[in-house]
Image 1: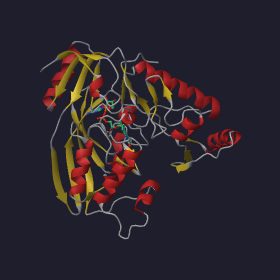
Image 2: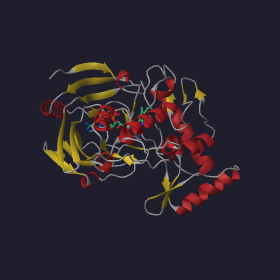
Image 3: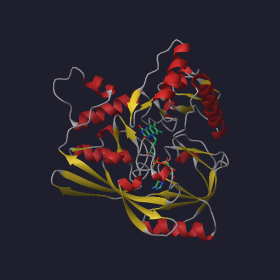
Image 4: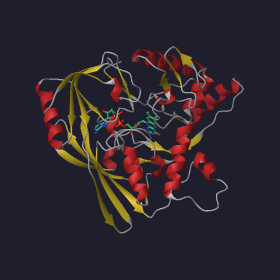
Length: 351
Ligand SMILES: Cc1cc2nc3c(=O)[nH]c(=O)nc-3n(C[C@H](O)[C@H](O)[C@H](O)COP(=O)(O)OP(=O)(O)OC[C@H]3O[C@@H](n4cnc5c(N)ncnc54)[C@H](O)[C@@H]3O)c2cc1C
């Protein structure tokens, strides 16, 4: 096991902030993952599992324990009556897996094109975009359970998938390391075109779009919102959407609508599961005084997307946290609603 010391982490994240890992190991096999976990346990070191670093805010002081970078690779395919089962190592690049599935005419993850990060990161927050979520195609998640040291295959139901929430980031936080993920896709299936952005993109097209045209459309739409990583574009030096869209009761929604009306605005909203209502967090952020292109020193709001806090260069994690706090405070004052951040905060003192 090659244990490195004081490894800078900022460059391993899309936000490009944060201090060093006291210890750092990259694991390319299940045995290496296990060895790193045992090493951390024997030294009583806190452990952090790193994927592609696209959903993280790492503290300026870094992480005081062992950062374990998951680099398990390999994708296998099995065909079964109109279905193709992709079993992918947790360290595989997510968008490359989507590209491969689309190229092989397999439907089910095409709307998740262009999302950065690893395959192993996708079940953690039930990654989703343009109406698809990984919960719709994941059949099982192979994990190492830290407490027992056992390797288990968790079923879709066991993962507790909901909107940006799963047992991995709630009740079982820190309990499992994802080793592999199995997706069951529809061979020759049609692309999923439910969202307005995508429907508008293809409006006027004579023939229904193919899977690859849909992938291309999603990537272009994402590019326009700086939701595709383009080196050198400081609007995508971010963790993607910084806040989850609030999902509230009808009563709460009526209160927020009244607050919006007092500002002369009409609240956009969508129906959500269980007679609840989903409110776009980006709209709340903009109306609370943080428009696209807003700057506060080295941090700001993306010029192309109101929901992305961005590092405009040389930002510190403290700058990001200060802007996050300010946005949350103003949104509570204006609309009485607490925005919940989507990224994971690493190396900060527990609140
Ligand atoms: C420009 C941009 C656009 C984005 N767009 C979207 C979007 O449309 N939809 C969306 O849902 N997300 C989006 N994201 C967020 C992010 O890309 C996803 O959440 C992604 O799945 C995170 O994967 P990762 O490998 O980078 O995980 P990391 O950021 O490295 O880690 C995130 C969390 O997952 C845990 N984790 C990672 N790998 C493992 C593993 N193998 N086992 C156990 N735990 C693990 C980490 O410990 C951490 O808690 C976007 C981010 C950016 C920067």
